[in-house]
Length: 191
Image (cartoon, rainbow, N blue to C red; front, side, top):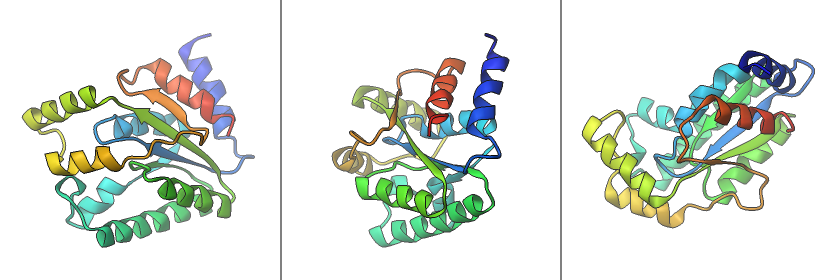
């Protein structure tokens, strides 16, 4: 089966107008590839991306430099408003966030349920070695804002993987080839 016919079949199933909208929560540590995969998935899902990093940037904040818990709560409230608005319009949403700790995932799951939306978690599982290499490469190329060593260490220490939550696990060591996108689309089609 060709790439276009596979994508067409998956797209038809995932974004059928007869089905409820879909909220996809990207989950993983910084530099695992969540934003890259979200951008690759969005066109096939016809989904809007809501990025907590973008919300913070619009507020003049940057999580990689450290943000207070109070400011993160404000950012989450803004993201919730945006996600609820998209879901109310029947739009699919990809939420680009770390999705940790677990209570954050539970909150998004409840928001989807309340909105009558389907819900899925896409977990980009990255090992510390690869994450460190990506962070170092970013510091040289400056493709995105830096994450301080202190913030990164705290992030690693407190991250709660979505074990036992029916998450779609993606090996972050893979690039984002067609096969990865197709695999995630196929898994989401059952949500």
